[in-house]
Image: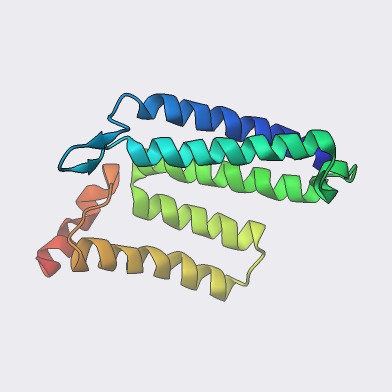
Length: 167
């Protein structure tokens, strides 16, 4: 895919997304509500209208070949970059799916371990430090400091002794 083709695809995609958001926003009030202000759908509607206009301008400039990107026939993304993006998307998808089954903390631990060690090729010291430190920090921040429970799925019983200490 060339840079020129990628610009066309993104302009069309953002136009379609804008139209969908505008359409959905009209289910709410998009006008002025007397003595209250803008309706609850006003901001999404008008922001997506702006996005639609910007995308339309990009499309016009693409047809006119008015920008360096609209004239470029260079490759948009290399195979190596595409591979890294694909692996990243797969790893994040795993994180999201695993959160439902084993909880956020263990899913995050597995995600960080894989990403740091195998994608980032970091040292064992860095990998283990971050892999253990980040979930512990997030647990302390959300569960203890903010008292906002995050999903733990089947791993919840493992946290009962910790709850006894902090509550």
